[in-house]
Image (cartoon, rainbow, N blue to C red; front, side, top):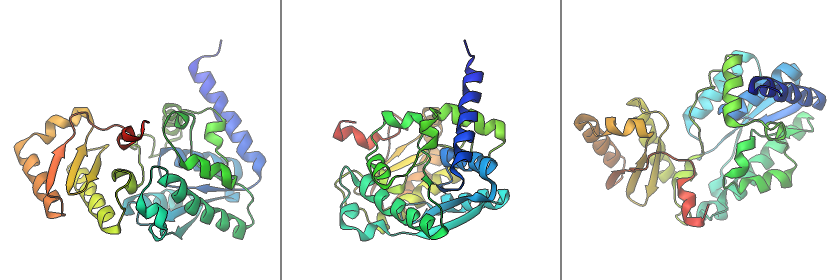
Length: 274
């Protein structure tokens, strides 16, 4: 019986062989844990025949784009950024429960166009084996566009990807999970650039105070802060509590609250039964 380590190495080897067999590849690169690992392995397997393409839009924090750019520059990986404005689409802006489907169709449609322009047949995303258990309407867009998901096909889970990333010396191995800024706004509430900017500024401020995996969920004029449970006590310290309240109100929120359940992925999906 194989050990866990052997099983992970087997998945890694099969992933690398699969990527090498493609000949060339465009990776939809967000700079997160999964897409960074996929890009690094693809670069080992394909060299200059792999290209990273990153979406630049109001839904993506500026810091994520900076980190994605630095990752590729440090490794000599060809990197393109493509500008998108999903909010120009009325359906995306209205924020239905399947918003991610419509948004991903726009973004990966554009990345596919870029791949075609470069003469590259295959486009990959960073979906992993754990993603099947979460509510992800965007996966339908991926399938419709013919995007491949090598990490999921290899059966690699998030924890395995982090472990392999650490072995490879990737700076992303312990990076907190990320999602687009629109995921902070409840379904049915209109998404605007103003709301997204306010959320981004609030989260940047909290990160600057040393908080790690955080979300600022915007319920109208109320900011609901989700923190890692181990960090909630620090938020209760008088100076920090006052600074956070003052800053978020300065940004435009009327009420500032701390969610006692702490950070959990997809907390706004509860209302739709996921």
